[in-house]
Amino acid sequence: MKKNRSYLRFLALAGGLLSVSTASLAQVNLNSISVGASYWKPSLDYWNQRSLLTGYNGGQGATLGGQVMPHVALEVGLVKGLSLGARAGYWRSSAAGTLSTGGVNRSEKLTLAIIPVSLELMYRFNSARTAATTDAADQSAKPKTPFVVPYVGVGLSRYFINNTFSRTVASGSGSVNESQSGNNYGVQVFVGAERKLVKKLYLALDVRYHLGSYNQLVQTESASTAEKVSLNGLEAGLALRLKLAE
Image (cartoon, rainbow, N blue to C red; front, side, top):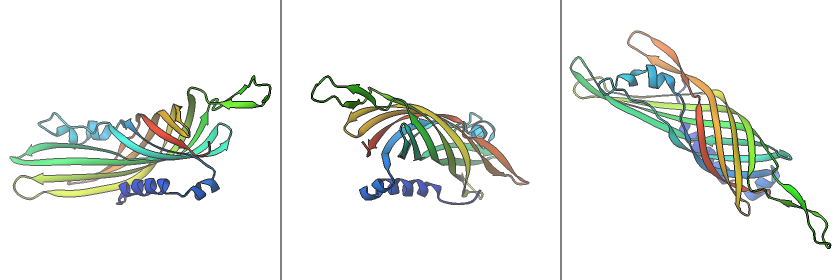
């Protein structure tokens, strides 16, 4: 896995999305910008079931669990009901424990950071319905916003991975502090619904499933192997969506 500072990519992307000028937004027909947070629990089967983490704390083990992930997104309208979007999040989890081998005590900690960046196609159902007015002076149709607007979508994702491993030996040599980084592709499928709060501002509930994996290089004293780590898992959360085209 190539070394990089993947977490900086999320900060740069988030800052870029939120600092775009109004004139630039109009040029690309940008429909909306969203900011939110969700809970994502990727499988991480290798780390939680077969890695060194299973021997931590006297064999009780330690796991990398689900965490809250902040995310930002933008949307560009294509045709009625159909839009193209981009989304990026930042997820981070840590597992730590102690080990004792041959009378030597050591403490270890693994921190895994994931930045899922996706290009998404979304379809909204019945985003606005038309109702005729009874006013004789105005017989034109007026659009009405429904109570909630459901949507479905699919996204092509790229997962940027960074993990940091540290080991501290109580007495003697052997302490380490190292990191690995890389990326791989995956898919996200999602459903959701949005509700208008005030003019241009909506609250969205989003549920999605990640399908992806990456290869983790594992080094031992005699060899190095590549272990497949699953990123499959459910994500659910809320977002505030500012609709610029409304």
